[in-house]
Amino acid sequence: MNILKQVMAAAALFSLTWLASCQKDQSINTTESMETIAAASADESLQESTFGEIFDDVAGIDDATAGENLGIYGTDGDGIFNGQATGNGTIETNQPNTRCFTVSVTPRERGVFPKTVVIDFGAGCEVRGHLRKGKIITVYSGKMHVPGSQAVTSFENFSIDSFAIEGKHTLTNSTEPGGNQRSFTVKVENAKITNINNGNWCKWNANRVRTQVEGNGSPFFPRDDVFSITGNRRVECSGGKNWSSEVAQPLIRKFTCKWIVKGLVKISLNGTSATLDFGDGTCDNTATLTRGDQSRTITLR
Image (cartoon, rainbow, N blue to C red):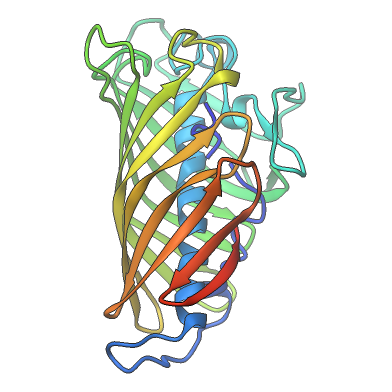
């Protein structure tokens, strides 16, 4: 499910344009520069990828790691437990046998809930090409392939490269009982990414609905999965930049590609609106930002 290759998949997630250099406010209330909107758009895609990895890992925990079929894919796993992105964005499912992180499950007894899973990267562990430290902690109310089950994730001294990660991520299996189309809601509360080197930050709240539009007939085989994403986000960054975004046309994510391949997001920044178009379905790391008659290509991390 490479929508599941999006919350805990992506490379160079944290070279945040907004966080890496604090730009001066060049706005005059109703008109923002294209550069400012482009920076917000780049951060928008980075935030989506960052917490998209969490979705991958929470839903993708495998049977062997959890001691039972706790995630969505059963024995196969996903996210940090299986799929890895290649240089061209495609996903390979060959997970190295040696892990630099540890996973604890409490209680370990099968069928006993709530169940707490702690992924511990210790003082430093390189995963997906980035150095991770600290812990990701998820409490499961039940098995995530069962409608109604919920998983709540928080962080303890967690960072990726030079960026500290905070916030609460709640994943709920919102599939209608007996339905043939899986659906998941994602609520992100008080999320924050801080550049450890200079103190710049962005924080946001978001709501997403992820509906599986292909691959429902093989729920434990992820490679044919395609998901449609809708929802909104409100963002505040150091330096006085605030914006909101709304999915105008559903975002499409395939298991076999780490980037969004299609869809349209509307971004509103201090009274200025622009759209971010993710393309025609081709797996690539670009999107087109348009404001009025101006366009610019945004590179997805």
